[in-house]
Image 1 (cartoon, each protein chain N blue to C red):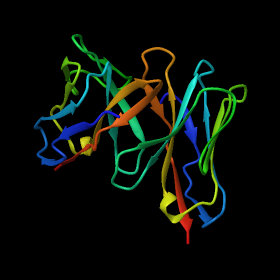
Image 2 (image 1 turned 60 degrees about the horizontal axis):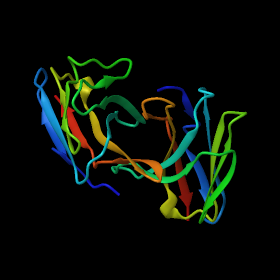
Image 3 (image 1 turned 90 degrees about the vertical axis):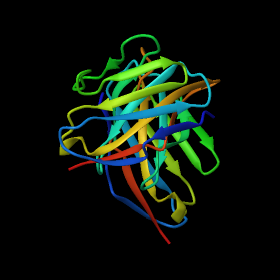
Image 4 (image 1 turned 180 degrees about the vertical axis):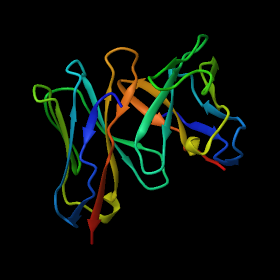
Length: 115
Length: 111
């Protein structure tokens, strides 16, 4: 299965700042997704990162707050902009692998704490 | 998100017992369903996928799907303390290939 590297693994940020999370995959994948997991909660899909075009955002998430880049089939970034304590969460990059059956594989996640 | 419901638990079972985890979904068009396991502080990992009505077995795990009732379940036989984790039910959207997760069920297997 694909190996996904995310960085940073964790960070402590100040209110009002922005942070960019990077996701690197060791193979070309069509579908890449960004999820958020708030403390004690399940996974919420933020957006689908589309290669060569604008990301597709889920209801409740907007590009101004969570700009996403997908310059090629192995790399994506998620920026959390103008952070507030409510943005403290784990952000997970994931890819869908289509090796016979569709499987969603996750990176290790980026744990952000906003003070 | 996107209406995948699970009993959040917590669910406790003694070692060696059968753990039963349940999930319902609202989108009748959904075709693909998944169970993920998430240990504390770790990322989710796939346990099983199921696409057809009926049962699918893999070792100690059995997934069951009933599309008419919009119901998915996971049975864990001979539960072990190492099975203690949060179990997430997920469905794949018919279009766009997005995966939507339920709220998760916390399972504790008591030695």
